[in-house]
Image 1 (tube, rainbow, N blue to C red):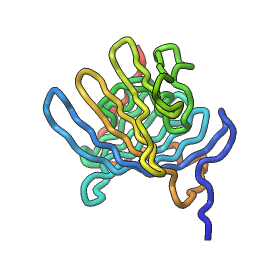
Image 2 (tube, rainbow, N blue to C red):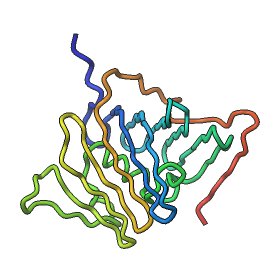
Image 3 (cartoon, one colour):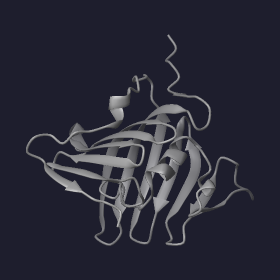
Length: 195
């Protein structure tokens, strides 16, 4: 039995589901860790991430719909709501990237369509490999694939994340409620607004 394709649709209206592993390093504190990720996205601006740590312990749930992002941190009993900007994923991803940039990476779209990124391709590298940088030295590099896995390296002067993602084997129905979270009773609520 063939599995159903989990990344489908044309650019701007595509839907996708991935499983991944992120290896995180804080270069200042010399700390590292690994997260298992389940990702569901729907263009142009819907994203859900479920991150688990060692032994499947829930670390974070992330939901983005439109220009807002919500993050549930069960270990801290904290719920964060903020605009979907470069700082909004910082509790999960140590390198400052916007959720829109992460969506571009997931759907294999060019990052240089966003003004902040300058990208290089070509030379002796394959078309599937590229490096994109921002003025503040944030770098995303598409590395050589490893079988079905797409590999990326996100870095900044203070942190690094290596991400390996594969298309999910089973499709979850992407309903509208999937991209929203609510604060559970007893959680501290933190709301951040753009100044």
